[in-house]
Length: 194
Image (cartoon, rainbow, N blue to C red):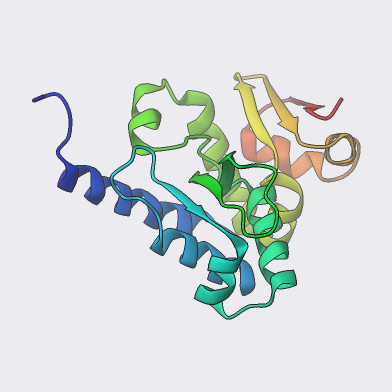
């Protein structure tokens, strides 16, 4: 039992992790309200922290309408801040379980991140920070949805959730800032929605 963290330590670590989630997120307005409501309901004694709730719970907690809550959840999923893990079909008064993720770090929890080599994730996080500093809106729309698969000194291989996003970033002027931020000569982007 000495190798396992006690509940207070786990809760403290999870609270720090969820602060990182909030700080790294580009969520604004309704999406920020929904994210904060989800974090306030999160189970601090699970690793990684999770939350199980319905859209009705979020409507009550945020005072937003159903359409705003649905839009905010879509935006947070698209950004990668929340990842549904159970109850994916959703529906009226059906609870969905989500886990949280720090955008740009590729990890699900501090414990999982600590166990990885992290070189690709660290370079991707640094690149995203640079791209956000240059143009926050462009970074949110085009770069945040990407996921780093492998980054070497000469080339980066990334994944996009859609073919459109992959081709748009690969074939337009969006590629140059990405290559510069990663410090590579070539960026290859494949889509996961083949």
